[in-house]
Length: 307
Image 1 (cartoon, rainbow, N blue to C red):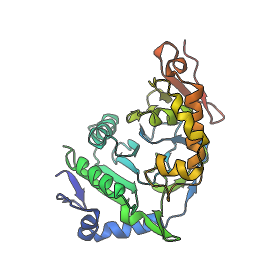
Image 2: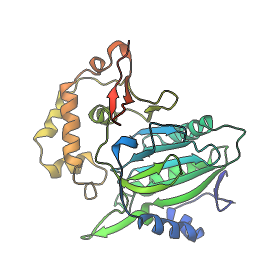
Image 3: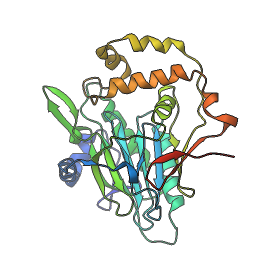
């Protein structure tokens, strides 16, 4: 049982309520976390992570100060950090492959951490709410169980998930915190929003929409965002969605129609339009090579020219 809370091993859990009953201080921490002010993160220092993506780096990175992700409803945002090396990873998990994703996150952070350094692995979980289908509850339990299965000791520090991230607005349950950032230098985790979700926002959304699995999107040694290559086949049937009203799109393309942020429908439409404009993914990856982006002196991500 390598998942610890206040240096005590966590036993198997049948519900998130059981976790919060057993460790009341996790409730207090969650309340404190969700009451923090929302930070609007400057895109010039940001590495943005979309659904089914993760990114990791260290405090030595001079291109990235904050890793962040938002638009999580039933999804969970997972931060794993090594206190000795400062190596940190953020993942946006939707439950598609939790049991293979968690070991990947642990391996990524440990490989970036100098084994001779003292320190420990600390875990921060934010996301989900009291949704009707209990999707959030299931994901919370699966993520906790997957971390329990790891051979490394992992210390749960922040756990603002499911019922502790729930608020009722106009008789509708929705998350309190939809997005978070992690300060790469200090390790501080905070509620955040991101007006800019690039680079290659539509391409990355298309990858997830067409069933792409969890992908690492950053090469910290080269300071490059790396997308793809992705594979999808032409599917003209999806044009059907562009003619539907917002309520229909919400009903069928969201796990939590009543709790989505206001831009969800437009995001879905632009992703579908991108797929219709690029019916064959091969054209986006000449020579089967990934798209690479480097940070310019202005702070933008710019497509790197590959020889």
